[in-house]
Amino acid sequence: MRRSLPPLKAIVAFEAVARIGSVTAAADELGVTHSAVSKQLAVLEGWLGAPLFESNRRHMKATPSALRLASAAGAALDLLTSAVDTFMPLEAAEVLEVIAPATFAMRWLIPRLPAFEAEFPHVDVRVRPIHTGEKWRDIPFDVVIRRGEALHSDLRSVTLLREEIGLLARPEIAAGLRSVTDLAGVQLLEAVTRPGELARWLVAADASVDCAIEAVRFGHFYIALEACLAGQGVIAAPIEVVADLLARGDLVEPFPAMRVIGPEYRLGYAPAGTRASLAASFADWAMRTATIDSGLPA
Image (cartoon, rainbow, N blue to C red):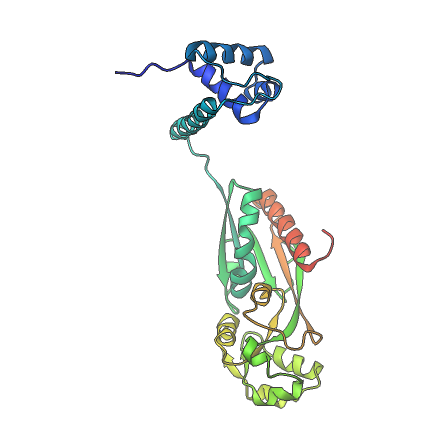
């Protein structure tokens, strides 16, 4: 048998007043008049045969029993809303295809995407990491990010950020580096996709460039970075891209005053592309994010 329940309109009005604590505010939320809500409260109190609120109606403080009813009503209404939503057609998300250098994509871009998706919940950003030497022009994209490379004139491009290269090491290794001369006894790491960066840092630090000759080289920067994280040696790395590792203390910069300027990251998109407006919004978000990360005013 179906249970006897009070009128749904009265329950909805009561739940809103009990939750908000004001008849006027509840009426605004429900899109009805103050008197309509008051009428529904009277209907429910008549049905229950008991008052819902304490005698001082100015504060609309629900009685203990009414609070339990309001909690149950709220949960039931949420459940009803969820069930009704299953009948509604899902809004197809707009897909935005982004290609970016592998390490930058993995360490800088992807960890920050939840903030973009919170701002643009209807957008599905799909990031494809690409490696040095790949013909990115042959890959379909809405947004492209390149490091140290001027983008073609058919793309609208903006400067996202410029790298600062610093020397990084595990804390236990950094503890033994009191001066650059101590690097002579430490294994240096380098990626073949970033040729010359380690040597440039050594020159700027007045350290022996001969150390770079003995560096262990890896095919990609993210592999060299993992070797550094594993304690296999020190690496010259872009501070912006590995900022999370420094913040957590996974890596340490033993000579923070000694950095060299690296290449720019540029973001581009086709101004006449099918998703040009969305790509422009993504570019604006990425620039704002990079500016905030740098500590400069947005």
